[in-house]
Amino acid sequence: MAIAVNERAWDGVPKMSGSSVFENMLCKARFKASQKFKDYDTSDATQGTLLHGYMENGTPVDEILDSSHAFLISECRRMEDQVTKEFGLHGDVTREPRLWLMNEKDEGILSGQIDYLEIDGEDASILDYKMLYGHYEEAPKNKQLQVYATLVFENYPDVQRVFVALLQPALGKWTKAVMHRDLSMILKEKLLKLAEEVEQEDAEMTAGHLQCKYCKALAHCPAAFEYLKNETIEKIDMENISNEELAEKMAIVGLIERFGKSVKSTAKNRLESGINIPGYKLRNTGSVTSFDAVGASEILFSANLPVAKFLQATKISEPDLIQIWADHTDQSKADAKKDLRTRLEQVMFRKEKAKSVSNA
Image: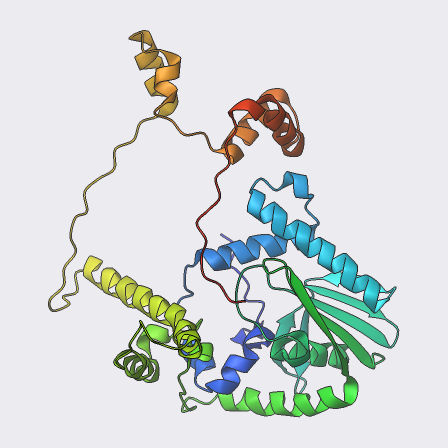
């Protein structure tokens, strides 16, 4: 079996990622601590990877079966066209290149994978896609884009100016900025220093909702535990809380939820391994009964159950039906989707999902 390669490692040693530099600045211990624990298994991370893959591979929108994903990709490409026209470059475009920052010993100490990079003589452009809802600093103040620009200056000596843009298709907005080589060289020195500091085993732990949110050590960190305790023991009059105070509390809601999920997961794993946790045990939650639809239909139809009655107990998933119809009619998924929607127009229903609270 092939062994997965850690693209963020240099000579087998994990190094900082350009996407988490700001969080590592806020908590110097975060980098080393995160290496000791597994990644969070989150649907957001999976969705983000999938959507970035569509952009990287140029997947046609009509081949994306999930309608919400198709909308996000369509919006992202519209924004990409608009911003690249404004930048006005006509150079070579690379998607998802990984660039490294080297120290004086010619060792890689930090890397970043850029969503969209265009090089045109002394000018370059960087686009960063934030596909899902979330709060991100706009391009002129975005730390990740500043780091990526520094990586471009380091790897392309002729480049003197980098145009950067942050695209947020879920929010329908994008922001842009221009970065120059002289200022990035100041940031380079800070990055080199930070790389040394985060490698120290006794690096300082500093908790906060920004640096803790996606830290893999969250549930194991004493600083994070104290931070959450202090934030949650405060008595709040929710009926009369100001909008500003409410916004501050909302900022740590996701952190509290992630902390709880991680603690429960750790407890479950230990209990399943036979380790005693005082006051807690595994409990059965019942079972779910399901049937093989094809086999069940053959048996019940032979017992004279009408097809329409049987189908009342089934639910048709559009992506699954598209795949089946594409195979049956020897069409592409895109053509099968159009064909099905035309044929089934009279029996097709759409229901808006419940609204959720997100960052503005």
